[in-house]
Length: 292
Image (cartoon, rainbow, N blue to C red):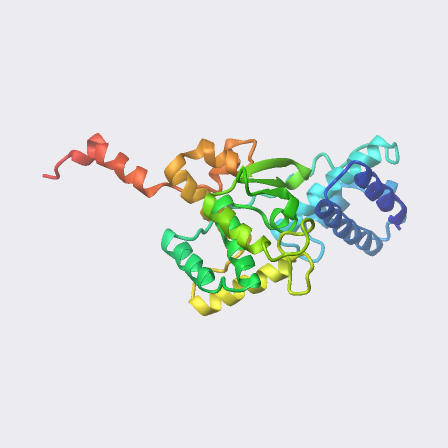
């Protein structure tokens, strides 16, 4: 029933340069909203009321708290578009509140665990695919790249002479990162036998750009062989890179590495530095008190 308005909105999002992932999410949530409207026998967008939005966001098909948050975000954008183009008179989605999501304690790899992983992939770096996997683990664990950033890397994005890497991040932001000398050497060895000088940096066995599923397979195999009790994924490595860099360089440099505009976002990734905390506690005046 709402197909015409939904398609108009999605076309607007493409023209507004929304990311591919955002458009995919908006499409999925609005298709759910269309199905919901049919169950409520709503035949026009002008017949939708605020209570319908509440029921859809929080109750339809018993969504998780993250799906509810995604639905609220979608409805806010959708109704902003409808109001802007005078398809509806009033933006009834402005009153929708995002659900409060309890903060969890993010996991990260300890120095020993990451060293174990590096040793595992270094021992298997005697083939092109083995070198590729080692590069993946080092890019994730030292530079904290996201999955989308990692898979989008091209050969021309790497300057081994200057030790720089040009990356494209969320929102299509571009910036450069300094690549450690040892990683430049490994990338050089990986690129040397390749015939092409442009195109995807990290390729699959079929000579195509690697996919997130390929990464999952690499992580799953390493987990099984090493017996690590943590599920390996790109965000775990991002937490690891932030935590280790914060230990030696502080939060400002860590913020620059991760590309965050707000310091608060970096603090979600960089965990407490136990060495600094221990040194502080030794200087704490009340820690010197003797118990009678």
